[in-house]
Picture 1 (cartoon, rainbow, N blue to C red):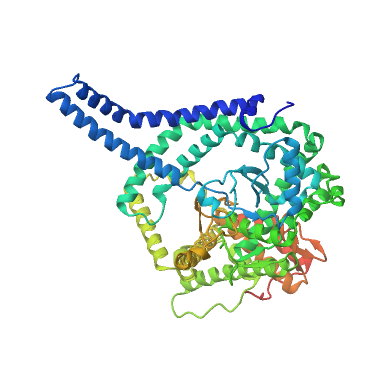
Picture 2: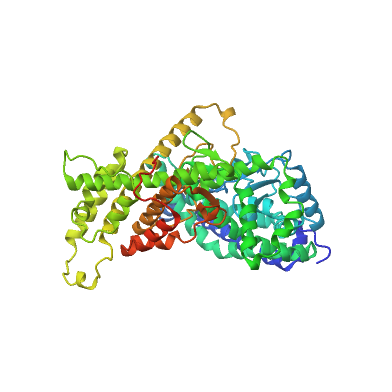
Length: 631
């Protein structure tokens, strides 16, 4: 592998680079065939006119053929020009990232440049961070991306997963980045760069018909261009995939001589960081995001989560001893500010939150998490549960009936879930949903009514088989089913209202941005994403990567009953809300986490058996008959 420069014709000295260049030429041949097909009618027309001049093609028939071919050639050339312009000008998708200027991370830039010198490849044009456990090179040479100040000299941008900077040590980060930085060598080859631009242009052209603001004529033309681009992309997709595999193989081969032993250890840290990051997002950050708060130091939380994992898991034993070495985040001038920007972007990508903080979207520090998030979440869920119970009781009692006198107590919830004959509560579920649901925008109501009408029509048209119900066992706890249905409907209404509110704020932000002077609409914090996009992003609606699938009504009901139990414990048994770095919100009794509460709540919800929960309440000193404080 000696003598490899990674640029120009020297790329062919590595097997992976040779394979990548061969596949790149195959992609360019697809482009050449398409161009040849576009100019073929014009070439035929030139031949026919040349035959007329020389006297070989004379006569009325040849004249008609010349006119037909000329018209066809003009139409084909105009269509090909339109396709070429759209492919060249369409904005390729860019990953939302946090841009790092060299002044914000001079040591990190120095590390990457030294690594590129050791590998003998060009240094990346810039460095950006992404809230994910991955790293890659991203081409941002398109003029729409150059306007934001990244990728201006033609080299790709190095995108680094922000959790790596906080969990990995400096040597481990250098070892992990070596194969990635080595990819700048093949990327500098003209054939590979041209093939990548062509593929990215085709991919961007397919998305042009979905651009908002197009009139019907332009949208129709964009759809035609999109169909042509889709055909071309299908023809070169396999070659493009093999080209990228060759580039990756070349980078890996070139990086073999740089920190190879450290890289083996660092790869173990990559898997560990991914596990800790996933737990932190789904168990810790997601409850805060749902409350309108976003943890401002997610990357620092990864260190705490993985340290806790090292303490619990014998397989991770010894990993925490690495914390005495210099962390890679020391390469940043202001790690706290970078962590905050990455945390806000993570909330946007994984939850669909606004791009900027606001009154309903504010940061929360880890020290404030138990009080600001955990306690508030429990009391909000408890209030929602009693709101649904009030709606069911009001619908069953009829208009003018007095409100219930027992108040928001845990006893009320347990009694409702242990009703052996639900009676009016089950039959009143529909009325309870209407009584409990929050006000929603008129458009959302119209959509719901349309969905109900469609469902009714399909049900009427379907064949009814009375034997179908004979195979279904009755639910073990019908009272829980009724309560779960009403609770799910209320949560769906609240989520629709939230999305409508964020969409309205997004529309106002886009209007303000469009009205601002061009000089004021420069680079934003996140490359490829507007400063206030709300619930939409460059590749479709946000969140781009939802963390959890929709949950069942029973799961939601169990969460709300657990929240009610925790509220009663905090108010009557001197328990406190806490934070578990791997499991999220936790109830602390006497400084210890209550680990055995979940199965007892499930026994109540699933089977209607309150005895396990009553035993737990009696043992811990929780008084279920006392009203709890709600939000």
